[in-house]
Structures are given as C-alpha cells and as structure tokens.
Amino acid sequence: MKNLKQLLIIVLLFSTCTLFAQQRVALHSNGATTIFSGANPFTDAYNAAANGDTLYLPGGVIPFPATIDKGLVIIGAGHYPDSTTATGKTVLSGSLTIRGEADKLWLEGIELTGNINFYNNHKVDSVTIRRCKFTSLEYTGNGTTPCVDNVIRENVINGGVNFGNATSSILSNNIISGQISYANNIGISNNILFHDPSSTYYSALFLYSNTCLISNNIILRNNGGGSNIYQECNLNSFINNIFRVVPNTGTNTFTTNYNSVDIATVFVNQSGNVFDYTQDYHLVNPATYLGTDGSQVGIYGGMYPIKDGAVPQNPHIQLKNMAPTTDVNGDLQIQIQVEAQDY
Image (cartoon, rainbow, N blue to C red; front, side, top):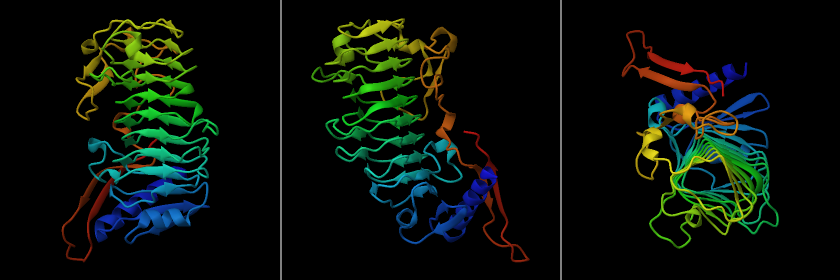
C-alpha cells in the first residue's frame, strides 16, 4: 500500500510538471496528500508540514527554504544523470542549514551546490542524510551540545566533513574528497576517501579526530606516512582499510589493514582524486579485500552497500513518452514507466 501511494504521488508530480511546465511538491501528512505549485512550492509545502510528514520533490532546480528546523522526510528524484533522464536531477542551488528542532530529519536523493550546515552548537539527533550530493558537511560548534545518532551514508561529498559538534554517529559508504576533522567517537566505515593534497600544512586526511573506529575504507592518500594520514589524532582504531602507504601508528591502533596497495589495481575504472560519474568504483577483485564483517571493503560492502545510480527509495520513473499533440479524440497520449524501490 505504501509503494502504491508513493507511485501515485510521483506519477502525479511528474505528469503535472510535464503538462504545465511548473514544479510541484507533494506533502504527505496523516494519510492525505497535498500538491503545492507556484513560485516556491518547496517552501510552501515546508511551511505547511509538521514533524513526521514527507515531502516529495520533483526534478529540476527548485527554490528551497534555506533553514530546516522540522523533523521531516524529504525525498528528491536523485542526482545521478543516468538515473534521472526521465525526471531530471533534484537540485538545490546553495547551502542548507539544519537547526535544533529537526530531530529525525531524513534527506535523500538531492543535489546541493553548496554545503549542509548544522547550526552552531545546535543539538540535532537521529538525522539521516542518504544518497545525496553536496560540497561539505559542517557540524559547527565546540561539542558542548553534540548531535548524536546521525547517519551519513551513500553520499557524494565533494569537500570535507567537520564533526565539531557531533558524536556517536556513522559516516558510511560515502565518496568523500576532503578532510575528516574533529571526529570523536564516530564510526567511519566503507568509504572511498580521495583526499591527497600536494600541500603539507594541515594536509592530513584525518585531523583532530579521536576514539573513532575507522574500518573497511579505501584511502587514496599517497604522500608520506602516518603524519600525512592523520594529524593530532589519538586512540583511533584503523582496521581492514586499504592504504597506498604504510602508515605510522602513533597512539592509534592499526590492525589487519592492506598496506602499500597499488590503487590502479583496485577499481574497475578510477583515476585522480575527484569523483566522476563516468568512473566505476566497483572492485576488480572484491574477495581480495574483505572488511571486518566479511563483505568487501569500500562502498559496495558493509552495513549500507551503495546502490548504483543512488536511486531514492520512492518509486522511480524510468521512462516517459508524451505525444506532442492530442489525437483526433482530443486525448493526449502519455506513457510513464515506474519501478518500485525496495530500499
């Protein structure tokens, strides 16, 4: 029944947007669905929503509320080009701020051109950010009121992650281009970590991070030993990671890692230190590099194996055909092919 309701919502959104060239946002609340249009449908739907409600966003660049302070489920059409040919990507142009009343917020299937920022020292718990693309993630603050139980998974993060005001959270199955800093008691697993700068000042991948479990990641840092893998980091456990170097241990623990690995032999198709939709991040030999749970290291193993195309969980429009004119009976022929999603 849930998939059927989602299917009807997504088809309604797509058909109305196509026919009238106007964006629609669906608000699902207490079993009823309201469609918002006009100049700012996302903002209008957000203003009408209450904690626990779900917003479905269409493809395209859409104006958005710059601050989220409600515990909503917000689902877009996705960001991978080959998975959004029928709908277009859901794009928010700019940065998004999350404030203290947004416990249990769920963001999925959205591309932001800017950052996701948690407001300074605001405690926002049980947030999930999944299958999105954005520049960086900033938990701004000094850790006096930390966010807990946040799950950041299956995303493309073109910058870094600053956990300055977060703890007891998960960073898993992401592709991350920048540094991971100020992480304390964070589970960091099954990520691809690209950061490999040419500079030496604060150029380490992990910065000011302590008591983290860092496991099953593929780490491309190639410049030097431990001092360039981490800086001012203590009491972390590095387990079953792929390294291009042999890291120094310091006060950290390194166990059963794969050291001095030629990254050119790891991925099916990957080069450089920048995410690219055309590259293939599957492992050439998945059984060669196993993680702590017996599945492969990297984004296709672990607790949250990444889904190719980062398709959101709601029904996915795969195909659309619309006749340019009506037929002799005045009917407009529209064909929409939708696939239900299991996860």
